[in-house]
Length: 210
View: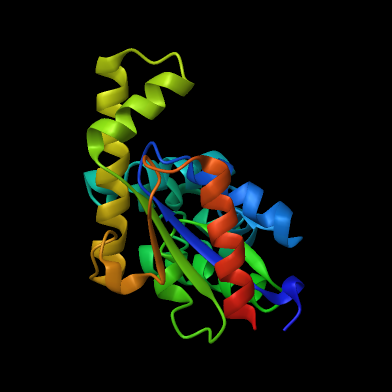
């Protein structure tokens, strides 16, 4: 199978460098990388401002239904119906759009970061599903070494980000984001250099692609 058709999904705990690793893997395999591109594509399909979609995802842990109010005011314009109070979508329709973007991209080869891609594409026969994780304190140390965040702010960001990601998969897919059963390759990103992580994923992706 050509590398151009390989599929890699990466789930990354906060502080594991998921975006940097994902982009490097995509570059090595000559594949597109989907991270912010997914909410952008969803926003285009829903005709919603990108900022609204991103706001919704950041606040999933606060209650997964309330953010739909963001879409309601323009619902009548999108649908061409007179009732201005009729919402355009539901959280499940939003999820369907997000999954549709991932499945279409997977037909041609892609590296996808987050958004439950390992669950959505679990039946893709040659896809490689990767989890980047590590002890919380070591992940925190990596974040502080690579950013200007104070420890208090880094801890808060770690707690909130990990919570939202766990909540997203638990709510929509009834799975634990950290479950080894979701992944082919489970790596401690705090114990290995980033270049080694990339090499391992690229080698495994090539093996899976056959």
